[in-house]
Image (cartoon, rainbow, N blue to C red; front, side, top):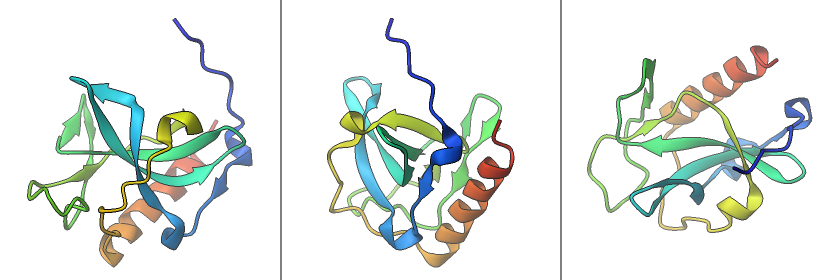
Length: 122
């Protein structure tokens, strides 16, 4: 079992919404598929990211519904997970160029989530 190094979350450089991008996250695999993640910040060796999913809930945590699916080839309802992940940059190399930018409404939802996570950081 690989032990994750401690991440100094206070040193995270948060990106402006125009810099956010969806990337293929090879650290989040299910049935040999990589899940897309929205990269919103970075540290030295990691990206701060929020997972994209079709699930309304994760355990007892509600995911945040997006107004439109950023994947133009997918018509299902899409959600952003309500938990910030820090994954090695090696696991998030591939930018998903065909994914659309988030709507203004969705950008506001994600910014609110980031602010909440920053204020409750330990």
